[in-house]
Length: 374
Image (cartoon, rainbow, N blue to C red):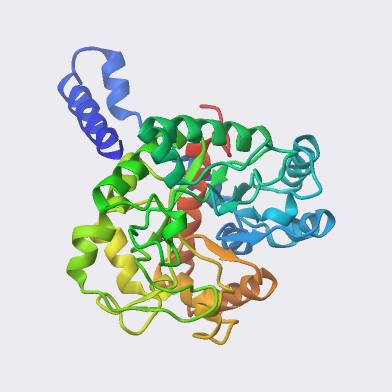
């Protein structure tokens, strides 16, 4: 889709340049420069506000989250199952509306509602009579058509309660039932997984729901980074011919976010977890060509806390090339990034790059409404 946008822009440029002398209106068109809405919004923000946009913070209780929104100006909030447990559709919608009203910049409101093992919302009958099914169950039940209809229903539920980004689909390739990630995947080869990702991202985009591919560059059959440092020793060829293909499919389909794993992928960077590796981020940006929002998994997971001193995790994540930092300990991490910029460890230009990508995504998803043309 993005390739089509570029092609359209080139065609329009040729039309305008070729017709510049046809009429006064054409001459005006030739001189027209579209307003960069994201840049305009960015230009009105303080350094602290721009850094805040880079954080997707953990939703806390109903009162604390409002004060945290006011204090940190986060780009968004992320909810987990316990945040829905004692709510109805109406009550959580009211609370999330209150969060939006409390924020100077409209928020990403995110959740992991993958279906199957990871269901933050549909596990509660107040929201749905049964959990959304896993990708594997849906595929067995009705192939990609069933996956598409399920995605439509999921988006409708999430949007009805104020969610605008679902951290899905899982783009990892796994055919081994004993592996940690298998139950969250479609459980098929790279080709079928690619079509699954393409289907889900396409339907999410059609429904105006933000999507996130995870866990780049591919989790494989490795262990759990929530509890340990995991090193993936597979050769580069295994990624090129397999794991990277579903990510490329989702990027081509127009995904908004790519979430990078905490695995150490030795063939790409033997020294740093992928989420903290400039080399892995350069691969995603320059080789694969993703120009959207790059996001970390939660920076308090053991694969990161055991690898850093804790406080420097967000600073290292920004230096590596991440735009959006999933962060439970944001009270520590936000000030650390602010201090890193003020001390010259991170440039303000680097912050501007990420903040602008996040603002642009919000504009694309309708989270932020563009200013009317003057």
